[in-house]
Image (cartoon, rainbow, N blue to C red; front, top):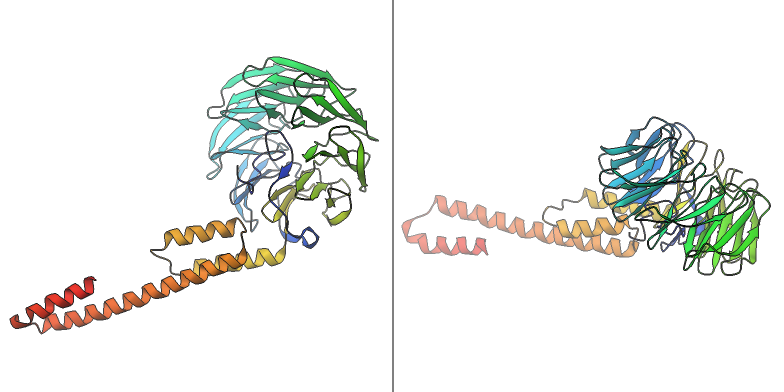
Length: 440
């Protein structure tokens, strides 16, 4: 996975929520585009290459151009899609409230397979090696073959599994509404350990080094030893914790229904700072460099300084933001209950890249495929704009030189045809010399 891809819920298999991509000027973030679906968007987007994949309560899974918001395709399931898509190779995996887990071709939206569970699938799939791991409201955690959808194993918990599995080494970590956090062998589904919290666990675990971090409806954030399930520390917030933790360096970031976003020392659980929003925070934070991005049910998307909790930027959508932000290159993507998927970025960068892309497309570039593909890749990855401009300038010079050489060649060819028309046997030696010159 490249830095610019955010191809599963919480970015990686350990659900750290942190990308190496950097938003260069978060204070300057502006709305670049928004796309309207037919209902609320609780699903968190996934980014793969040049596309955004996301579900909606209107029953559809959407694929959009990540730079323009243009609809590429949409696929209809039998009910709402709250699950967040996961991308692996050329395929999209996602759950639906129609009880199915779907595998689609990410480019053509062709259905490859679907697997029926016994109830709604709110949980977001995790893809590890050749397997898909996901929970269902039928109380089971499933492991499926990612290529065929064949059931490998399933593990029964005592209640609904809305939590999304995290994977570290050979183990799967997931929460359940039966109040437990589970650790299973990822190859066999065998129970390694389980830890009981005081209430429902909708939060998805995050893993860092030897520790698992997760929230519970009992108002606590927990840190457990990932190998034994032993409690290391717990931190009490003022309300339910459905948000999934993000981890960066020595800190854990998580939201609570007490309206706060918390930053804790990941080793001790000590409070570093907390930031108050205007309502519940069920959205899970995303981290890019020194900044935390998160949504709230006060309709806002926030950017905070990750070290101090200082507000850097916020944007008001038309309704709740339970979707968790994702970051790709210089842009932030997130869904809202107002039915829209939003893209934010630096408009100057976005506009210049669009102009450069348009300029490249306007050129007659036959015979320069390698140069064109290299520049397209740099534009797609929002790389150094000056470098892209120089590359296009050099390409123009090569095209001009090529055209000039072709012009000279055609002129010589014309002259040759004229000589050929007047050719006398005694001029044969001169004619052969001219043909050689054109060939060269």
